[in-house]
Image (cartoon, rainbow, N blue to C red; front, side, top):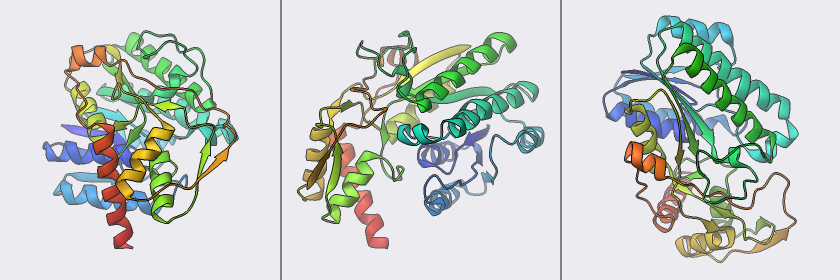
Length: 320
């Protein structure tokens, strides 16, 4: 198959691209290498993807909000499948730049959907977020729960993009799935994420900042399990569906710090800070639908995943 992976040089996108290439597909990555974090990190991700590609990995470097460039790409390549992972990510940054998040996550997704509609109607998989559940009081979160209480603009833009996906599936008979990802972590994860921040500071014997009392709970999901879920969605026969992809276990931030302490052999020096706006008390995936319809079954427990991540982080430090 010819597969478009938007955000293909990012954290999850690069892992997905490698998996697709290993299974023999032709991968076209779309990434603009913006400065949300150091673009050199994504350049390195793409270098690793190319090593796997054996000539079947192609990079298109522009912003998917660019209607002209996106249309020309869909005209030039007849895609069988689109994995749409590219987005402006991060809850706290969305508080500072809400318009940018709307422009990218909603208008950009609309641009991709419309190009897909006009040029071949490939299967379309949209990577959403557990953030859409917001202040949902019911746990674990199920796909049928209402998503009417987002806690930040980032979550609101993901809800808007999901709604567009449903509209296009309904109006134009497109095969579209929404994958709600829960707290993905692992090698190459973004530098603004908790596990990477905590590990880096602890290995450098520097204090970490803990916002709140450390009792917030998160459903951390290892990147390989997320990629497996996305591959299973791609292989499923569907019209429009929403799937949770999580580990379906939660861990408090204090417990996470203890796991990183064990993996690094370092004791955390914690600086307590007030809670941050936009944080939710828990993320917790009900994955029964994904298990039933996809055979999805996460394999990497958080204890093993943190050890794998710390090992990778140390190797990166040794490379300089």
